[in-house]
Image (cartoon, rainbow, N blue to C red; front, side):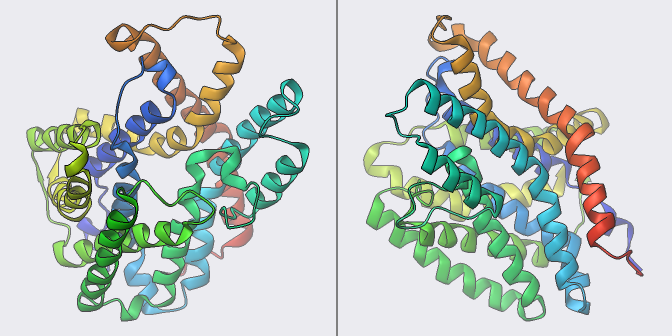
Length: 357
């Protein structure tokens, strides 16, 4: 019988995901953030993979090891991701169709739109020879296919994923990360048609490390609000920091291989107080919607404004940035209530048999 700790949520981890998501927003919609520079914010993707591995192991490992749950797990993960993904695709499609209308000779063509829709329906990644993919409609969605692959592989071989095997995987994929840094000079790779293998290296390392940390850590924790807020502040600094060009590869490897794991350990052990915890949990719940919706919504705002609004640089742009973030949270919340939640419930009812456990 599951203990109380097995039912716990990880509120500080939710807060980390929220911080990562909003810094990615600043990266992709810079015109609303006064040109804010967050050059290392792409590393949030590696953090998301790390947290995903940790949380998936916490929620599903025991059932997967008992057997008979692989198909249900795969459907559960797909159901969790797809409805909001489809919303992001729909918003991106509006932007693409508008681009075809106002700039027929531009990047978007009717053929590329058709290919993007077809690939997007199946969450198909950008591969060599493809002029567009589903991620072309909504840039951040390129990260979802690698994560689903990692989930499915874990489900298929969960019984064999001992701490020793996971440690070996971390070593192998960690070597891959070093190769990526040497070959490209950055980990900001994986979204192009010729580097899907890099995306698999990134998810392979961080997801495996998340599984390993969960296996080693257990679920004990204490309410330590100050430490919880410090964890969020550290993440903000790491993702917003601008390393010297010659130190960039070392910095990125240190953050992904050492900084993020230590942060997850701290976040799993130190939980906020009741009030902060509710904020962390809410923003963590909204972070997936914020992550998927921000780029197409930013593009729609740019289209609607048509350069009629002069947004200042620097801190003077803060009201615009905060307003956009608030709008994202509101839209994500409304979609959770009216689309994501109901659609996921309907899909679970239609596709998943009631659990007998």
